[in-house]
Image (tube, rainbow, N blue to C red):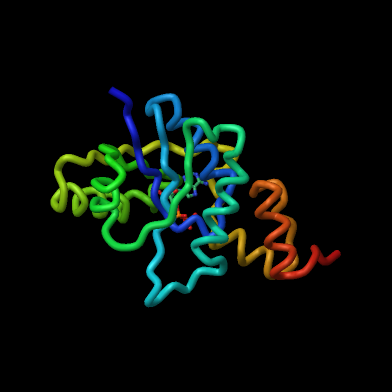
Length: 165
Ligand code: ADP
């Protein structure tokens, strides 16, 4: 039986750190859905869910036979039921990610014990890459081109203007 996992997050926007986790997860799972979680009532994201999904699709185009992107709202475990996935993937960077991630994993298990959470550790190259920081640096004119896929870099430049000397 094929193993399908949901790699869930806000992906606002997707970074090379996220892509690193997707590639690692492909070593363990057959199919991966990159699931963009959004809340229409209080979404403070820079990019709309549709924009985030479109950027992910472009960034994983070379893996499109096994990786898809989708947006969902509501409980992640219910989304996993809908798409018939039995695993959630989360990426861990520093120890500081751990407490929050552990709480979420326990809560998701409480809600649906069929779905198992798997943690994968980030590549040391992207250990410090976070969407929030990438946006902040880009908004101040810093160069983030090495940290995000080209489609995201173009979108950030469009939003914030080109890099300032
Ligand atoms: P963030 O806004 O912090 O980048 P997301 O909610 O979009 O976070 O992230 C989805 C998942 O990917 C989370 O489990 C997060 O810990 C993980 N993640 C984010 N950035 C990285 C990275 N550079 N390396 C590994 N995992 C990451």
